[in-house]
Image: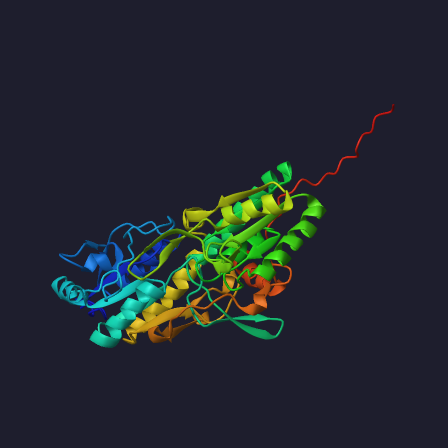
Length: 409
């Protein structure tokens, strides 16, 4: 007689909230596959927390085909907050609880960043709903308590599914734009997603961006002058320049005599976040006017969070799902699986994972060890961090320098 599996008769619900990443579907696939081993039924909750409001929006993932290599979220996503917020002061937690009961969902696995998993944490703490969080963000600012060992020094960093693939795309984009910048002797200002942290923007330096501006270091009036002087010095060398800037970089406004963020829209989502965008255009315009150098803005935008899931991310989601399975087996809820340390691809395995309390999940800015504010460049320690994840990167450049011909007469 077949023995009953540990979660047979139980239902596990999976939801994804916030911005999509190339690794969300891989996370869903691995969570689904691991839970299936325990005999549970697996439901997908569509559009994040929104799928648990009203009548609910639920699909059955049990014994269904699923393509984890495709980026984005097959379960869709939203920035819905079931708890009271400035935009929506009404609590909708009762709707969430009602639908969990109606659909007989026993355990929730929430794939998201600080906002999505913050709501899950409250459900666990206030309502004792069995929840396991699963990290997700291309910004890579979710505090996973991961350690990067660099030359004998331990640097506390983040590593979230979605970031490796997004970083790879930023590197690729930066590499390609170099050939255009070199052809026209231009300064290209690349705007990269990053509201409060420069993790992803810094990846452009691995694609050989010459300068990087991040939210962790605001550009004051004095820093702005230093920035322009640095541009002049670097531009004289190759007569072209790549500058990467986080969308959330604080930039000194001459007219207002203050440092500020550039907004694409001041309208906020249910977690209170306005939409950023446009800082690259402001900086490119000021470079052209002040330094008389042809400068152009280029917004990388959603390109970084789109497309396929790369191999490091694929293996990362497997390792974290392995740890999630361990948490399920021990009914150790209210936790999130994370990597203990930064390791190269062959070592992204369960034995290098751990779990942290969801109550400890918050945001972590780019470490000071990773940035050289005087040169507006990333430090060698950051390159070592990304080398573990992305490996060696080829530099796209024309390698020949032809002798100049002068007229005989």
